[in-house]
Length: 301
Image (cartoon, rainbow, N blue to C red; front, side, top):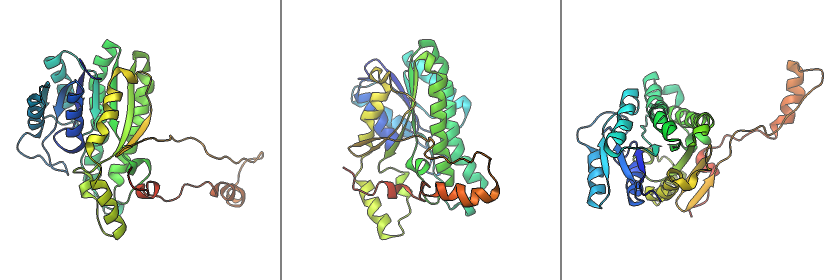
């Protein structure tokens, strides 16, 4: 499906990103493997996780190049795109997968931990997409694939920074899809379910959470690659502005925010009629205080 294509995957030194880079290579793509070589919280480490993945791709007969720049740095994002152009002469898809976690309850979260997560996830998706856009516009084609999360789409405890970033990515993706449609550039989101470095950080403080984590361990990141490869290839030319989720062998299309109920008074509203009429009329349609596990209570298929 991806013969002749060039795909950039960020945060591809391990976990989901590595699985997506290897999957793209197996589908025929040349791959730019980006990874900063950092811990789960974003602290730099020595060594080159990106080069290790490149070596795997080369060993199986594929083509790849490593990049160690940070997605949070606009110049770093430019360098990733330039690496694709210098090495392979083109770029067809970017997978915005890079991320960090600094979980904590909102009332205990520091500004630094909030900002750091936003910079890597949301600013990173913006930086890489922006750097790729001149290439995509010039060739009048391209695909941007952003990793979001049900933590943002639905909600989770102790992840205000991560949830805000991931829901922000959804809005960013939709705006990109609208703004770049005239150049046949596509932009979609995937909320992946898979056991990776990020999900390994989930707090296990109840039997219910323990059972949930046991199920997550069964979900391999390789299961996400087929959808990513489809979205990166020409077969998805008519698919843009959408939000998908992958959970083991299930693919979900997620809804997007639309009005679900309205109430009006011809004479206008007062505080008293909002309380006596407006809220009682709307309350039956309120969204419950769910977390992701409440919405996906059945075992992965």
